[in-house]
Amino acid sequence: MSSFLPVIFLVLVFVPSILSAPVTSLTKDYYQETCPDFSKIVRETVTTTQGPQGRTAAGILRLFFHDCFLEGCDASVLIAKNALNKSERDDELNHSLTEETFDIVTRIKAALEESCPGVVSCADILAQSTHDVVTMIGGPSYEVKLGRKDGFESKAHKVRENLPLPNHTVHDMMSLFQKKGFTLKEMVALSGAHTIGISHCKDFISRVIGPQPDPDIEARYAEVLKSLCKDYTVNETRGSFLDPVTPDKFDNMYYKNLEKGMGLLASDHILFKDNSTRPFVELYANDQTVFFEDFARAMEKLGMVGVKGDKDGEVRRRCDNLNKPNGSVAEPDKSFTGGNISFELNL
Image 1 (spheres, rainbow, N blue to C red):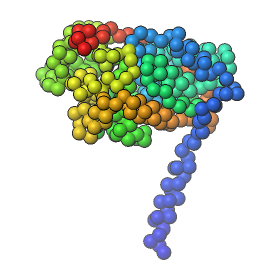
Image 2: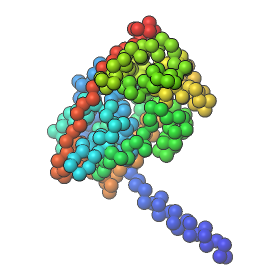
Image 3: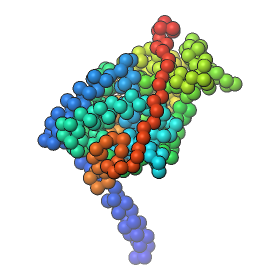
Image 4: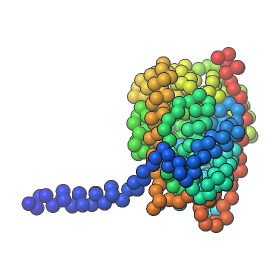
């Protein structure tokens, strides 16, 4: 009989940890009664601020991913620093999140506060606006469930341990994605978000300049990257599109580029080079419909990561501040200078 005691003890210890996890029910029509114009206001605001070449879409999509992969989808990435705390926005990895993107969220929040004050969370604004910008530039539509609450915490020191880095291996990236409940295939599908957006030279320059340049990079592509980044040490805004062929369109060109040796980041290229992820790259390169279907499902899953409920969250009056005075200030913008290199490559 005593042999069963350890098992019983483990069960008693383990069960409370499960029960203590927040359980939040999200619904598609969460604001139907309390803020019926929610979707309309978000979409109209995003439409009027949509920038050229998919930059706005890429910025909001990146903002959403960086938010969900830290404390969950709770808009903690939007909180500005104050005298007592460095927020997620202060970490170097988040300096690529431009003030332009934060400003769009602020505009949406202001419009919603005018229409239905104190109702819509900043976390839901991020989720819905991400969906809208993706579809606006040709990406797939997917279901966005609503009812998230905004988190109470934003810590800069938590950023680096939770986000993929430009030089990560498949193993490195998968260790992060797996913690959030994603499969290897879902990780490759979400990586397809790199079909839009830019990356600064410091994140990839070692692949084309230095003692050990990457021999796998397509030769003409490498030369153009060298030219784009020739003065990156004095102009940190220098960079390149992640997809040099169709940078303003959400499609499967990212995967086709990987097959040609035109993945910008080492963490992009490794998806084709690694035997465990190459089949998924080839699948998505050959069939955009399958990519869109898998990306849509993965985005629905991403939107459910670490969701906060009424007991561990709030609806902020301002997205950059908790509902109490804390003297927050915003970070300066990090602009981008670069170009569409498809013309130079005659692609």
